[in-house]
Length: 491
Image 1 (tube, one colour):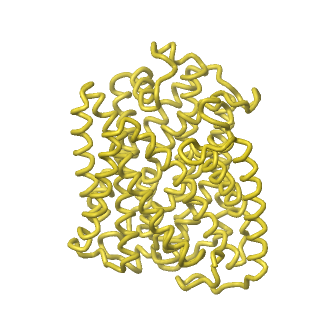
Image 2 (cartoon, one colour; image 1 turned 45 degrees about the vertical axis):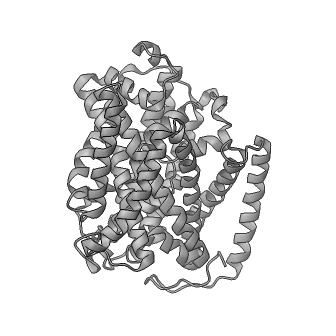
Image 3 (cartoon, helix red, strand yellow; image 1 turned 135 degrees about the horizontal axis):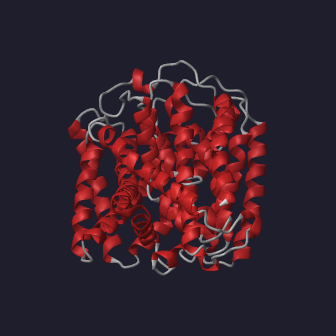
């Protein structure tokens, strides 16, 4: 528990200290935000700061900081180190700068931003890549909460299917209607449930104060079956440390913030809050798997992540507290799934130059988007391994998206003569992680671990050299105004 306590304090200190450093480097000012200058009553709507924070937090949370942390905790204390360092120096920086850059470019979506700074060809790749990722999120985040809710109702799969239909219908309405009509009203309630769950479980941990694996015990891999710590841990725990999916969500709130100086609590702060949730579930899981909690609860220590959530919540918090905790866990994926599909609609509309003020034109995009998502959902349900296949591809694609975002923001910082070290270091590291995982994963090339590690080192060296050569050719760019920032790194 000492490692947990130190990690918790480190996350808070990271927001107060490093968050201010990142904010100072970017330099928010008093220019009108898109929510003010481009208000349309549908996607560009000024919302209260507390509501923006709640929506952003739920947008980025999903099941990642819960299920990912549970699976990542099986690797041992190394999970603490990745959550803390990844969240402060990579994930929160990634979320803040992508959100602020979107705000500086009229609320532009991720493919548009990547195209501006990494080139038109990269933009087209990112368009397809990000839309497919968002559709996978929509499909996965229908099935996982439906599975939990269905099991609570009955052991019959019929209830799982019923909940899939209910959640899918909600997704359609939330994607189609103005952001303040559904999302802006129910998200605060869901956010309270999710935060209650985290605080309640943390309180139980402090009361029990169990003996857990600590960083002082070493960073040995306690779950060899899950693959090597590098790179598998850094893919397994994504949303609690760094997640490219977040960069597709930040533009939603970049269109709703009334002042640039609110960016740090909204973007950097929401990511730190998610890191706290991941830290709590990682600690709960270490107690469950390695500290005797499974035996105390009368269940095997081999339960899967959704079963761990249900068992721990009901066993520790009682009927009422457990119900609230499970509501929070269910709300997290639902509220990420609906905004994922909303982001897909906006990205496609931006690419097609199709205005979204008219509901008829929103329907034009929603129908094919939901048709593809329904197909992915059917595969998820029909194939017994469908969820695992989609989730594994989602995990790698998610972190690869973060790589593109970090490189795009690095180019922006270089051209503005700002301190680019805050993004180049995580960009190089995540480039190495994603390549190594792609090479050793059984679902892709399945090469030996040493091959993946060698390729990771080589990719890091090549990327650093390529960046250094590109940087020598750059000249200062004009201040932000949404204009083309000059020669992108991808050309």
